[in-house]
Amino acid sequence: WLKPPSPLGGSANVRGLVGRAAVCLDSQGWESFWARRQILLDVGMSTIPLTATVSLLNNNLTVSANGWVACVHNSVAAGGGKLLLTNMAAGGESKDGPEVAQATDIRYIDLPSGESVLVVSSTNGTQIYNEDTTMLASYVAITEGPDGESLKQHQGCCLVPSLQHIVIGTWKGSLALVAAGLGFAQLVEGQPSAPTTGVADVCFVEVTGTVVSAHHGGELRVWTTSESGPYQNVNAVTTAGQAPVRISSLGARLLVAFGPGTIWLYDAVSFEAQAELSAHARLLTAVQVKEDLGWAITVGEDTVLNVWQVDSETGRIGLQHTSIVTDKLLTGAVLFGNEVLVSAYDSSELVRVPL
Picture (cartoon, one colour):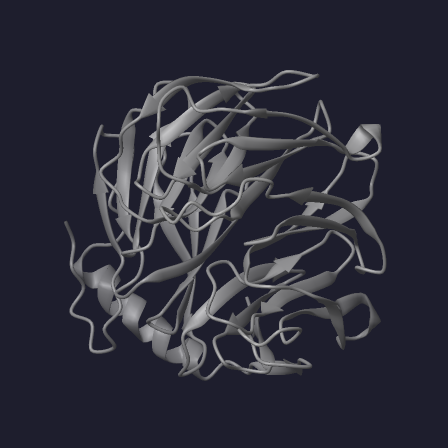
């Protein structure tokens, strides 16, 4: 392990597990690192006003290919929750979106047709909207009534591009399927091979053609796809982490980010652990992976934004950017052009951080 002498309370430790992930910074490098961080504090950041405050929700920011940005304002008051939308292509115009009740996940999915849809999961099920949320394309309901044992909700989604399936995680550990190419028809739900905890996030892994779900208990489950559904759960993998925040394909690797602040890299085929990264000093709250760049953009309750790069050949992890954004708990981060947009709890602004 490397532990930098951080006067700011941040940390970025890397441990190679199978010789593929090299430690990137020596003691002299850490001095440079902290000097660079201080310089970045003085980099000009600007803000975009929102129509309401952002709620404390993991990954509470998403962006479409055409520049629509969405986040959630949850409320316990009836009719008080809503989506907050910003059109970056129109200079950052913000507006209210549809009402939402206790959203658990929000994500833009860019379909092969060029259309983008906004998938909003909550304790009421999942709504799929068009890009600017002026039309509801599909609603996936939670049909079972409460049994007092667990909170009924949907959480996490991904796209299987070849099938145009939108895959949605449920509290039962199952996968709900929506065929976007068939008018957003709902297919038969895939069930886990054994009892498990609810799905926290889900991703499609191109190198294996499978879907992998990360569950609140820390385990990963592998699913084979089917054009007509349901998907079959063919494997379960135990991890050393807890409270997954994000799972994402990263070339030949699988990235899993856990709430306590660590990110693990696994071989996408064998699930052999390759590296563990201590990415944040406090809880990690959001991750966006840009697979084409090999980037993982992370924020946490330590108020820090980090941009990591994973070398596709060696698995070497490098820190591309770091900055302290604001004195609030950060809840989301997305790359847009040459800047990162960041949301923060109880803030009615998005922060624009130039790279």
